[in-house]
Image (tube, rainbow, N blue to C red; front, side):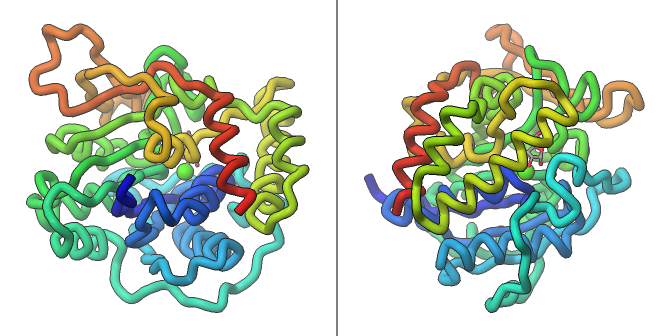
Length: 312
Ligand code: RIB
Ligand code: CA
């Protein structure tokens, strides 16, 4: 398998951080061209720092981190620090990383990286509000045809929302950017809550992670322990879903996932349903189905993949 040239766009964020640990631990499969950060779960200043903290823990300072949009395209920023802690990394001890962010805005870094790479080779894994990707598309529309694909964590259809009854957080946080991305013609695989709610960190799965003795595994376990506590406190007694690492798992082992072609539009104006993803499964209404929606996940396979890579 040739390594996939990859840009990870994220808002770390506890689950983004676990996704980064997984991506950093798979250099043979993923050629990480850049990590780009966006304001989301916590403000942009913190998401940029947090990505660099995880990069340092993973000893991957070879990968540049570019800071990006501090605000959504149109609406006001709405953080989710109740799910990620004020720092954005739960109980993890934070510090000022040794290596600074790279110069330049994340959106420009996406444009320059994609346009400087061979056509249809670069993938973007988008696991936060999609402001940077939308800005990149507006700055240089040619990125749409030049990108190989985009893997998105976002949206909900059969599962309902997690930030409002109708919307999942990443889309709700910047619905206008999401609509730009989903209507651009990009080849997109979407892992919404319909997928990620099938992937839950049960006590057994967490114990298996805690039993590993590597910096990455210890860090991931601590992040997931925080998610377990927050889920109990804010949602209920069940195990927390594992959202963002599913995008990286899809890239590493797509056979663990089932996806179907869909139409997809985003509610960008209703105060009641802002950020809702209207996912159309009926085949005769799709038009050119550039979007695929993940409906089934082999959760045991995802955790086995996580453990396999975090032992490195
Ligand atoms: O709804 C889950 C998504 O929102 C994840 O990306 C999580 O990090 C938050 O950003
Ligand atoms: Ca995220």
